[in-house]
Image (tube, rainbow, N blue to C red):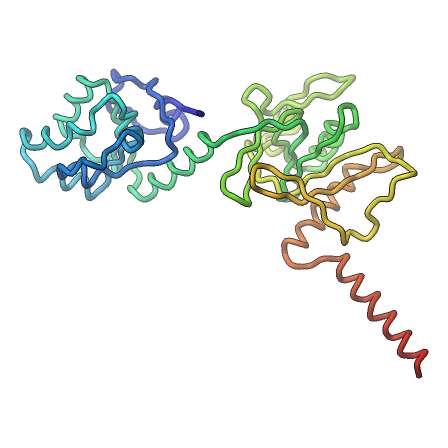
Length: 315
């Protein structure tokens, strides 16, 4: 099971650490948050293990409710949040943290964080962050490039020219996401996202030259951290015996988790500009997403032409 630490959450989302002496290495394993309204009212029968292990978010309603009690009564109700399972308690709107909660944090080592952002914004931001960081991830051999907004994963056997093609695309103004190894996770069914492992971010390997840092060489605009994969381009050696897709009517897919992604095969042959072909493939895929299919348009026109000729012969 994937996990991040409270410190990872702080670093990524820049939350204020109200209790720096608490344990920021505590693990967060559930991609959900809990707003402990019923629990703070004493109804903790449903405060089970999986709910306790979620981030406990204190928003506007919870904060005003807490301030309706005196210190003694307040301690009775908030103590339920301070247990060994709770990874962290997070306050929104830069709310003041009650002294009794600071005391309980020191006793139980449960950290307290704070943000100036509204509750709904924090909920959405943290939820999306956890969904990505804690999602099941699989690694694939290939290169992921953002070509005019289309996430293209270039695959193929070793030495086929994936990285060299990616380098040419970067020179043309497109963005590298990952070279050699792409870590892929499913954000939701129908949406898969790829990114590079931390150690490989911004780097690309070109045989004969070595390792290149694309940001240092081409600028910050040549790299992005992650991208949805919407097209797979598999490079393969040209074979005169093989029949290739000439019209583009046939569709093929690559499966990632429960998501099917459109796949094309590009035969590699001396004199063919693979980077140009991938650029065109990405633009064509974008047009299809917008509702226009050139192959279907051509097929329809061809059928109309044949029908008109046949009608002419009948006359």
